Amino acid sequence: MSTRMMMMMPTTATTSSSKNNNKNNKNDDAFFSRRSTNTNGKSSKKMVRAMASGGETTERAFDPREYRRQLGKSDQYTRKFLNDPEAKKTMEDEGIGYSMTGLVAQMKEKNFVHVEGEVTVKLADSYGFCWGVERAVQMCYEARKQYPTEKMWITNEIIHNPTVNMRLSEMGVNFIEEKGGVKNFEPVQSGEVVVLPAFGASIHEMKLLAEKGVSIVDTTCPWVSKVWNAVDTHARKEFTSIIHGKYAHEETVATASFAKTYLVVKDMKEASWVCDYILNGTATKEEFMEKFKNAHSDGFDPEKDLDAVGVANQTTMLKGETEAIGKLFERTMMEKHGVQNLGEHYLVTDTICDATQERQDAIYKLVDEKPDIMMIVGGFNSSNTSHLQEISEDANITSFWVDTADRIDTENNKISWRTSHGEMRETENWLPEGKLTVGITSGASTPDKVVEDVLEAIFASKAKTAAGVAR
Image 1 (cartoon, one colour):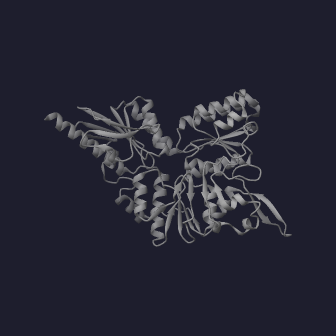
Image 2: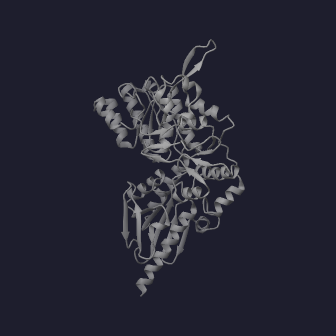
Image 3: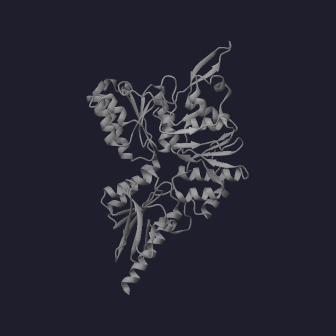
């Protein structure tokens, strides 16, 4: 089985119908995978059994969209955003969210510029917490208020930011443990509360949790749900979903669970390789399967399943690259099948997230101004933040990506930082003498307070450096 990750599922979560068919559905009773497999080897559309009126057992395909829709009607599930002002104020007081009076708020009132000593800071005009992230975090705060005594869990980090997740831990929110690619749901008990994070959870996790009798608080960003709808449309039209994303990223895993047949491509290079295979047969089937061994639905056959495709994306990927990949597959299908038949072989849907696009557009504009250095602030496991760093690096701007101000040694003018490719580095004397222009932006999961802390560390380091020069 090529599944990347399995989730431990206790037998108490097994429904009566699946118990009655234990021999036929042994794997489904014991586990739910990130990619489920049915009797035909297709992903996501597992076969489930139902009793017909005459008492005979019939089979029907498991429909992820319909299951989520029905789950949404139950009392144990909510995705309602209450917009509770008390929860919002608590977030602000704890530095989780938008700055209302701090330096970032002041910069927004002053054309996104601040001067302190020899340092001029230019803030990107679109940065930090997006609406979907703020909504997810506030829903978690609201859930804690709504369920003050119940044990609360979250299936993964609510967002990819260490400051926010640490605060949730302090509030008594427990994170589902994962070891060796396996999530252990056994400690979760009936009557407890489980939060689904902003980037969503697979339909199989939702089903598992519903069967355990927990209260589910679904904070999935509506833009992510839009992508799920897109791949569901592909499935209903019998198109293969080409998902531009990182196959192990939680959002892509969730999206894949709503697809039927899919292939995940990480970048334009992989997409071009696939299109060359479609047009020219540049590799064998075995070579294809080996190259994408972790990035396709179970039972995927490149000789059959690339005849008709639709493109969707992980919402945090580079907008321009997603568009280019879509155009590439469109041209490939026109060349393969003829312009007149394009509609039978290619389906386009707009799944690019506005917030991701706006932050990327803003950093392009900022690096065009050629600051002396760029500061990228955000969690090291944040995909959208990594792309902001990538844009800055590609513009040949000296750029430092930090997740917290703790990465800056203010006493010794030293910084620990991360490249867009995940390499940790340490740079001494990173702030030069004299006047300095710093461009700064932050990922969509980064509270303003973290940005303000980073700026304060820069000012402190620069003041220390200037004092040393003066002596």
